[in-house]
Structures are given as structure tokens and as C-alpha cells.
Length: 65
Image (tube, rainbow, N blue to C red; front, side, top):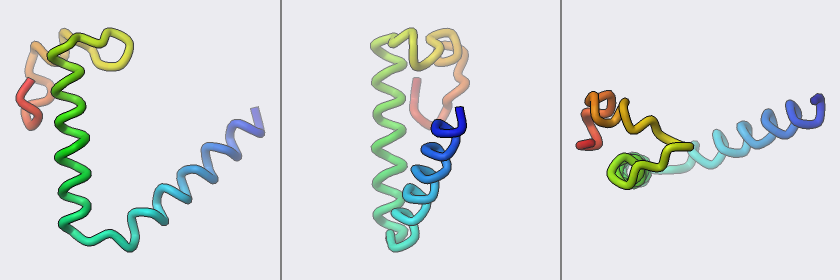
């Protein structure tokens, strides 16, 4: 359990450090990419990752589900 917690902490620090030097355009591109991936999962209906009922209810209005 302690190993898992330390892994999550270290990976979060590296993820944060990766975002620091990014420009606003790079961050916008990453956000658009993640929204597209979420919209694709909503359309396909990947039950383990995204609730299909949440997509149908409009819980993600920015991705166009």
C-alpha cells in the first residue's frame, strides 16, 4: 500500500512538472484531445471507463456527447 501511494505521488509530481513549461496553446491542444477521447468513449459506450447514462444525460456538455 505504501509503495502504491509513493508511486502515485511521484507520478503526480512528474505530471505536474511536465505541464509547467507548456505554453497555453499546448495546454489547449491537450484539453481538446482529451475532450475528443471522452466524446469517442461516450459514442462507443465503453462501460468500464465512462458512464453511458452520464453521457446521454448531458453530463459532459463541452464534449458534445
